Image (tube, rainbow, N blue to C red):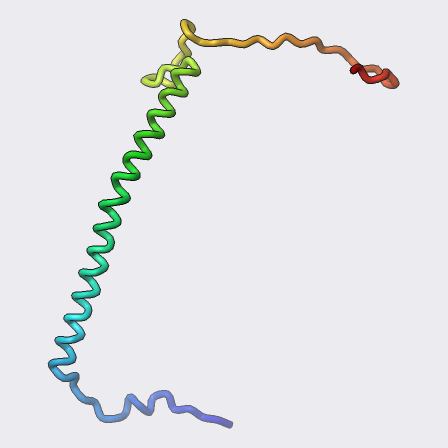
Length: 105
């Protein structure tokens, strides 16, 4: 049977980290943090105006479609305007098709 002592390294002699290594670690973490912050800020400077523009365009399209449908964009849940509402009436004839009746062409 194979046995592995996982705690062998913990019982060994402990040494303090050299001062230059701790300063180097802190400097590296600051550089990485600043790089991530600059990346996020540059993405925000690009994406926020694009999102605002797309939202304004979508709102403009929605308002124009509501106006075309005869709905007041300021009160969309109110009664529709009757003045410029365009209504198409489709007239149809309904009848019962009897069994065995030949199809109409």
